[in-house]
Figure 1 (cartoon, rainbow, N blue to C red):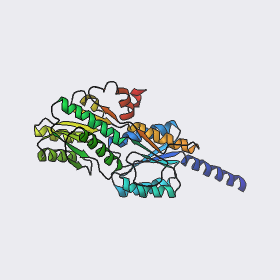
Figure 2: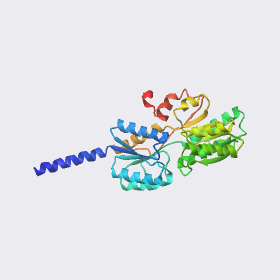
Figure 3: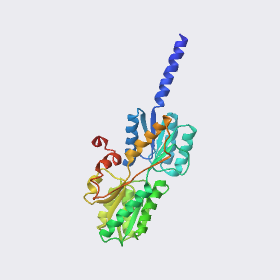
Figure 4: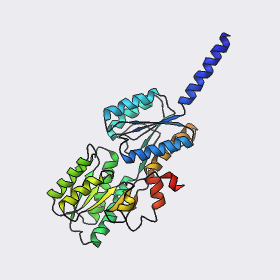
Length: 316
């Protein structure tokens, strides 16, 4: 009888452990931001397809909470962790903790200053921003505003992806002889902050004709400030929102450099699964950024819906 009980306990423990090992946890900087929601959707969809459970922990843009979430994730003993760090420097500490727990980790976007990880899946931020700058120069020349300057509302430059976006964009502007007016960095990613930054740039630099927002979800703050200025100022972004399917064709947004967040999340889980099945995986995977304008949005529409916006039901 005792042997049977011990055997039952062993089988039950093995079952629970196996269940635990079939979970993927996604550590995200702020699940309230659409971009991270879409990566989470890609992680969840791919996890479901590959028969993993899924859980997401949001840091709410707090480095302290990110560390707390990391400890919580480690205690759950998942099969693997996908992380989009709050910033590249804090990611170093997070990776040390995960390594100590011997859990495979894939970084999805943002990047890290150092540390060990299985794979880093990101957008080609430098080339993507460079191409946006090239497309913008054509637009400015066509509309006879190439002598005017461009203002930038940037994501934090402590992030590796933020630095690359700025560097690529400024390289293109320099090659085309277009002046960069100034830069303001986002901190809390709020609508109010974007509005204030745009208003400040417009009042400080009367010759600005273009604002580049290095994100997309707070574009309304920028548009409100532009409207109040009663000046003809054009807005372009990095990333996209569902409304952009209308705002780009009607010229409200002149250009968007669209990352493919659903694809990033999807590939992160596939990479973890390949590793867990003893397959070799790529250390660095870079995905294209789509430079989308009024002229090409129709031909890229299905790719935008699925990989950029995570609209998978329509794409099937």
